[in-house]
Image (cartoon, rainbow, N blue to C red; front, top):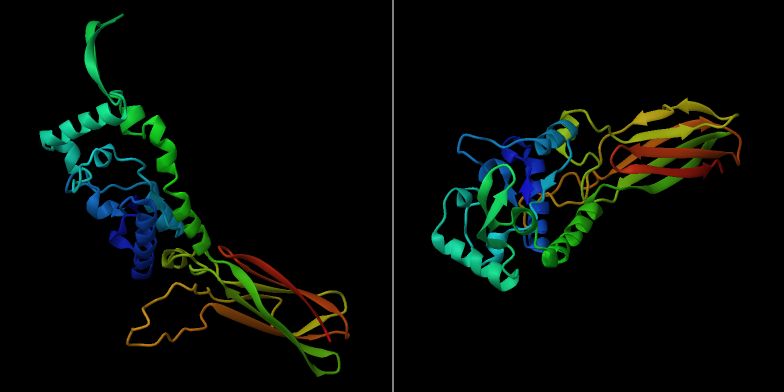
Length: 287
């Protein structure tokens, strides 16, 4: 699996990338490598593309899954991801040919044979079937290879931020005067912004609270629409043996309060939205 070019990532994003990449390597059996450090066609050439744009401009996490490795399947280990294609020992070729004969019925590598081409005349065809056995798994192994990834993809999905209602409260302050409090939390593993780059690029807003006032109810203090901060996820910032305690133990939560004037028994709708963590709704009664 190729990860984003991590030479210019924020430390927090880099740590999260490595953590989720290591999980993917464990669940899939495919190593997680840095495109910037380990996947260069030339020492001075940096591979870039969609993965960099998605992170740099959208602040989203990105992996490229390079499904299938015939050389690994043939028992070749400890090889360079790019260098091997430039040069490798002939013993590796013999291992691959044996794998073709033993496991692919000799179809992965076809012996050269003469062929009359309508324009070119006599030519020879043969060699590796790159599309069916090299770039893609052989037909009889495709289901096995694809089955390596749903577990990891499910873990990625479960790690996403998720907004939930933590608490609502209504307290009487006087005649038809009430304090309304609305607290939410991010129950996900990742923060509501997903990455620090999203904050830097101003792609993801903080948590937006709204109080929806029905007829007959007026706002005494507070604003109908309140923009609060981003909410941390539950990914640990350090191990339990860390020297300094976590000073932001409640950074996964946000609370807003309003003072309203309205008749007892009136229902008021509340909503909170985080761009990447969803929307939650609640209703309180002035009572």
